[in-house]
Amino acid sequence: MASQLRVYVPEHPLIKHWLGVARDENTPPVLFKTAMAELGRWLTYEAGRYWLPTVDTEVTTPLAIAKASLIDPQIPFVIVPILRAGLGLLEGAQGLLPLAKIYHLGLVRNETTLEPSLYLNKLPEQFAPGTHLLLLDPMLATGNTIMAALDLLMARGIDANLIRLVSVVAAPSALQKLSNAHPHLTIYTAMIDEQLNDRGYIVPGLGDAGDRCFGT
Ligand code: URA
Image (tube, rainbow, N blue to C red; front, side):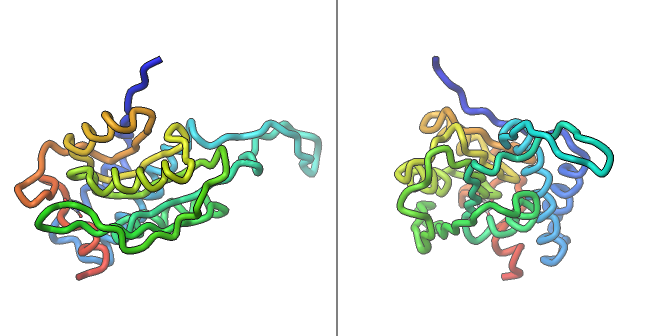
């Protein structure tokens, strides 16, 4: 059966609020970092709804036995933040998945060619079958960086069906590439903006997410 890229833009007042704060050019770096952490938290919360596997069990309360549904301890969970800007989302995401292993991936965009180059790869050689992976990249602009990251993950045995990609702003150019190359992927984003400028920045976007997170 043919599959289609799934892109969710959750309608949540907290997501809208923190996106507005992040977009505002007058927001100072410390508040921008808070906004990214909150967006990481609420978008991960939404992404987990149909993705986190649970097991039905029983627990003994102080009064009686109760049915319980717990996160399956047998399932490996990992978070992959794409540096630098993915680090902004990590704080909130990690708060919800404290037992997940975190593998950092550093990809920097050449501002002339807009092509990414890899400068840090902490991925394991192979992921265990069934690994559930949360991929963090706030700005899906040209799509070149996220495509490079997905190539690295697929080569290490990750099943695209088990990935949840959390972004803050996505552009149609990136979504089109992802739809063609990774139709089994699921994305949670705070907003889809309409276009890129001639330097590959999302408009209206929020500027350079890495620079704004780290005050550079
Ligand atoms: N990376 C960013 O940080 N912002 C954009 O608008 C595009 C890529």
